[in-house]
Image 1 (cartoon, rainbow, N blue to C red):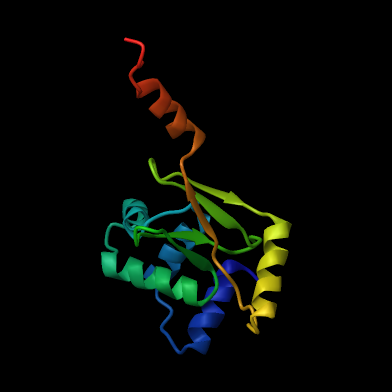
Image 2 (image 1 turned 120 degrees about the vertical axis):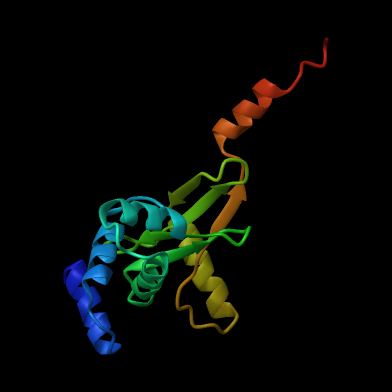
Length: 152
């Protein structure tokens, strides 16, 4: 099923109106690559559709999440980023605490371990979001270059 058909089916099932603005926002967002804040999405959509309001964009992204077409990635500082989840396999994230770089990764061993832990705890695993925090190689290199030499 196409992205637009999935959205239309969700709106119909939820008895929500199908509006041109919702469709434009959804199509624009779903064509974006990477992880974006609501503000970044709003500004990108606004470039193409000058009449769209911030609240409409935010509500549409929420609808896309509810419909399973978008995924929210909640960062440790409380910031949310959104990514299209259509035709994408599950993945987890690494977050640089210095520059905010977000890297996707997949590890089958981690996936198996999470299922094992959930099962041993009596949980029926419905899904998960794994966010690993650290410092990316570029920021570590930059810190090394900025560190004063102790021999002086």
